[in-house]
Image 1 (tube, rainbow, N blue to C red):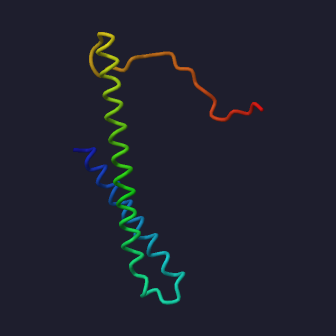
Image 2: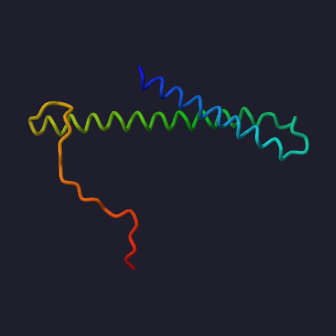
Image 3: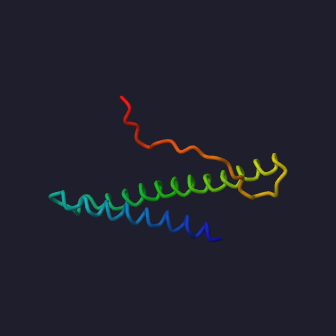
Length: 97
């Protein structure tokens, strides 16, 4: 239930952020009352972005659990126990020319 609450909060905060950004665009118009729709447009875009982010976050967390389960079942170990491996870190910035 905790992940649902976190995803719901993410979606709502993204929607509110989009509404605030839509509200901030009103100062650029000579007659802001003609462009009140920017607030609802920003809210809708924020909700869509929040849903996309929450869905991607959920897929990543499910993928991690499935990865642990697959490796553990193949190696005959207890399910959901991480497998320790040697990891080679690649540099983030390559300065070779």
